[in-house]
Length: 292
Image 1 (cartoon, helix red, strand yellow):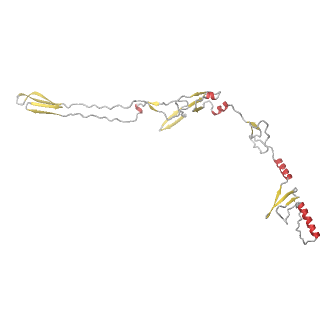
Image 2: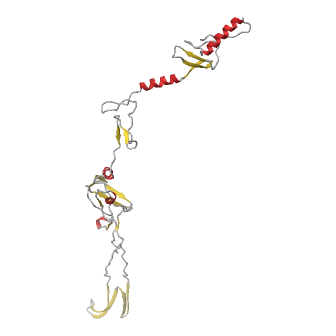
Image 3: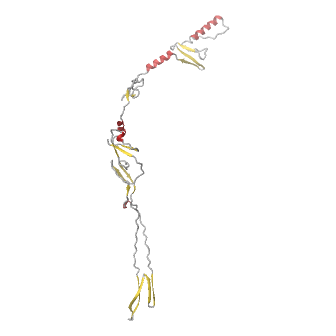
């Protein structure tokens, strides 16, 4: 019923009463009909659409005219029932087929903390591993474990066997590499190097030594006065006999100069021949190798 008219005091009594009766019926029926009212609109009025499962709409605006659905219990129940019916069960994936979204299978009592929903649509228990199984994954046989503590892995992880590696050695990767034209090859398990090293002659840097030679005094003199003579230094004098060109024999003075000498030089040694430090800066740890 959507007949709603304005009441005018000048109307005849029968006309006024007829209008009032129709207005009351329209309000009581919530302006029911197959279309929304278009006249005498007031925000808040309602309309029951008999062509839409008797759903009730409320006018929320007159400019523009806006009718909004007022959800009823039956409407909500129908919507939920329809929606639930449209939801399919969860379909698990396979190796060749994708799964489908939906309602998941109900979890089983007592499996609330150790089970998970697998992509194949079933509940599966989380795989539990022993400590040794974890160590087998993290540190398989042949692995190295380093620690700054004194812990023994043989004690920490029962069922595994470890040996302590040589002290004082660093690790070098196996393989070959070239440096300054020289190729170095390291085979797995090789050892080498030394903590301290004494240089050989061939390992010394090319160098020279300065030599100092002292000077030698080669001065001297001689003097003759009459039959007397004196000398010193490299000059020595004496008396000798002679025969002159006229055949006269006589005595005279002789002198000799002796400047013969030699030089000696030596280069002193230095250094003690001690071995030099050959290690890089280091921090000491314990290193273990797993053998079984």
